[in-house]
Image (cartoon, rainbow, N blue to C red; front, side, top):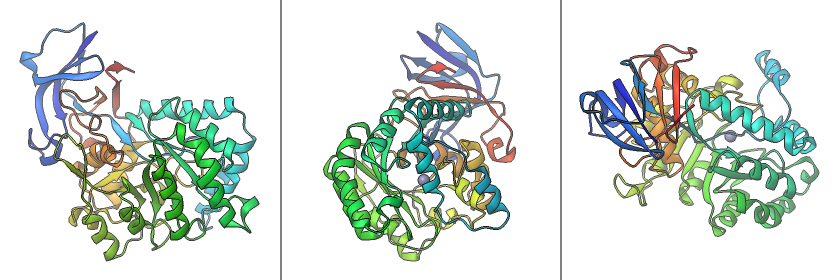
Length: 400
Ligand SMILES: [Zn+2]
């Protein structure tokens, strides 16, 4: 079954140099042919080949689907009251994670599965065609393994976050918890995970514990991601760079040494577009919004030529949004990004943070994950905040 999206006014390809707009590679008045879930052809609308089905974009903008490279969807319970208390002046400490751990352990598989599927569908409706999903609210061998098993039912990008916090029953003996994470918990989780992540922060895991846990995951073939420098300065970013992490996430409190370390990363990879990759700085402005905290300085990172991604951090405590357009708008208004930089970071940037070159980009051979906006330009995603501008989503070439 073939499908052509015709009459596209503005196509964001993210193929640098293939059109206007620098890295966005914008082409105008084009059509996209989709076959077997992949982009098969892009060219002038007047030359569009025949196809089994035609979608008329009516002159609107078409973009790659959003790549949300940081989300925590496997949980139970609700922390709206904690949000309200924060908005009334209480500070965010990360301690509420244990509230969700209790609710998640008590939930049935069916309840967890229903939440994951509801949020996955909610994200897809808003244009997110790839979403990374972390465990981290089970914190026992069986609860972490089942969290990842359920996450893997809807996404190939699953991340073991057994080192989210030290659970209450190990509070007096964190070394024992690290041994559990590195041993039986990782062994049970790894078959269902592509990545390993650690919350490296004061009150969670220090550099030595985080390094030990991430090294154990690497030894089993998992890629590295780090929750780093969210609540204050710390060793997380430099630890991620040291271990060749695909991404260090949050990056709210950075020293010059952290920025220099990120800017210097360059690893060999099999990327289609140039043969190297780097440690991406993934910024999560929904967390700063929802904890009323200072935003990360994206401008500083971009000016240092660090690769920046945007993601939602969707979770019930500190950022309960699944909306990538909301994050784009925040990044533009509050973090010094241009609309073009924010759109790139929410698509191609997320793909780099997941070390993927088949998504976040529209070129022949890429996955046919694309969104049709109710707007003539990608600029409207930041220009019209809060407006549901995603008219139609194609996921693996299938209209949703
Ligand atoms: Zn997170």
